[in-house]
Length: 95
Image 1 (tube, rainbow, N blue to C red):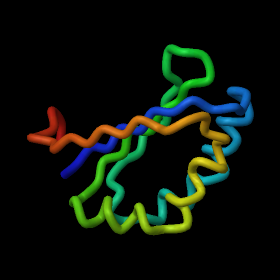
Image 2 (image 1 turned 180 degrees about the horizontal axis):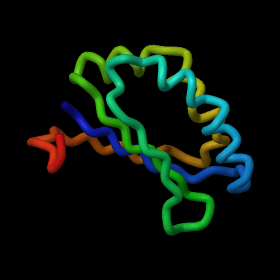
Image 3 (image 1 turned 135 degrees about the vertical axis):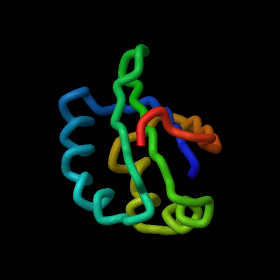
Image 4 (image 1 turned 60 degrees about the horizontal axis):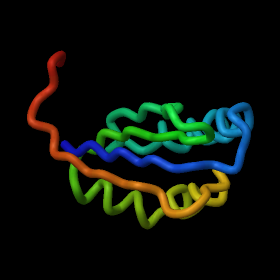
């Protein structure tokens, strides 16, 4: 499994960023290969993140080609380029 951590600055207020996230939850939930997604408010003002756990590298790559992925920047009014880190998960604490 892979963990993808995306961090970005948004021009939206916190209230509006949460609304966007909530409006898109069902679309993410419909992706079977996305095992979990955590929505995060980071310590810097107007900075948010998403931590996604993917079943496989190919699942993550397939997601990047979707309309949902292509619209992230516009939906959240991302300022500048997001920072994306990808990690391979060794094993979970709890199963």
